[in-house]
Length: 155
Image (cartoon, rainbow, N blue to C red):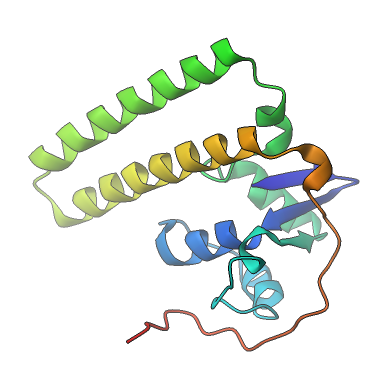
């Protein structure tokens, strides 16, 4: 989830991790530098922490990232809007799956898989956001600092 407030954006650590590993988009170096102060090896409590980005270009970048949901757009969603969103997303997934099965070129296949994964990620985040009470979200910066290892595999 992302939250825009006072010309800043707060992005959940689990969404940053997803974006770095699976997003399939070009990420500005300034975002990598800021995120390097946190660890990709998250505990269950870390995944819900938010990292603040205050650079104008970073804020603009996160406005364009559609697979990380904006909490303000989702928290006041009615049941009807939620049902319409879910139907629309499920339709997109069916279309992506059909296109994936018929894709002939490798890069076309990768692009479609990224779109499929991003839509799944978005669905999961919307479901989670509807369960969270806005008063439980803390946007303050954490004091923990650990080494950040991109692409590190366990095992």
